[in-house]
Image 1: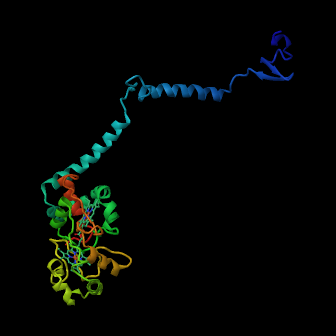
Image 2 (image 1 turned 90 degrees about the horizontal axis):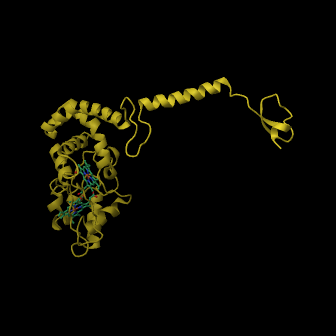
Image 3 (image 1 turned 90 degrees about the vertical axis):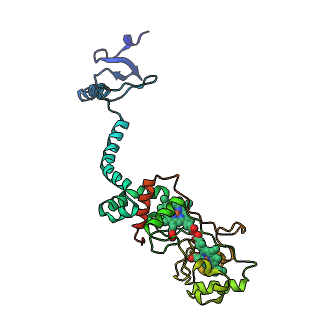
Length: 283
Ligand code: HEC
Ligand code: HEC
């Protein structure tokens, strides 16, 4: 028995699908606005496919009439940036770090463009803006282990640095002597402490206790701490007892500034020297 023979509403244009006596599906056309949107979206897809890359093929894709690609747009934008940078980079290549520093325009350029290189290579250890981290020296002050001239900073970055101080605990110094020296250093009076001379500290830290740039030996008189810790007196005792990079003591401090000779171009190292100098502490 076909549904149509039992259609109780034969003239209203329903589809003939009827449930529960009178619930039925009508065959009305979709509203005009809906059909227009439907055709417009088809037109859009065709138009889009004509202009832009669209359909993936086995090992290629439909390229579109304009040849536009996202990577092409990106490359065009970066080559614009490079074109702006090129005259500066060309000049920098021919100049020493010191000459760059003396040129207001170029050093402003390095200050602006060096941020990314510093962020990628240095900030993890030295903090954003060279503000330092526990165990890693502040680069933004004028207290230097290895000297703050532009040439010294450049040498530090190129070759790396690793301060050496022999452990003094055990045979060299008794605990009482370590206490005496540590307190004198903590109070800024180390040069008046006879042990400073008799135990050879001054050989590296200098007769005035201010350190020597060639060795990276810290200034022991200025109250700025290379190994800054909440209990500073204990930190000083620890350094004296275990030394720095002394391979014979497993508890020695192990600071190491890596060499960037193979990691950064000479150009970028030059820029970093200027960039660090311009944190304000260069001298
Ligand atoms: C893995 C950690 C680390 C990274 C990365 C690092 N440094 Fe260092 N840097 C150190 C340590 C540790 C010292 C101190 C070395 C010492 O005590 O002998 C130091 C010292 C320095 C000094 C000497 C500071 C002074 O007082 O004389 C400069 C300048 C410096 N770093 C610049 C940089 C720059 C610029 C970068 C990035 C290109 C960088 N560092 C990346 C760990 C790092
Ligand atoms: C062979 C050279 C050498 C001798 C000898 C030496 N030091 Fe040092 N000392 C260093 C160096 C280098 C550093 C810094 C290491 C670094 O930061 O990489 C240092 C760091 C220190 C520090 C850490 C300072 C801070 O700011 O945290 C103290 C404290 C110290 N020395 C005390 C002494 C005392 C006391 C003596 C003598 C008993 C002595 N040193 C002998 C080379 C030496």
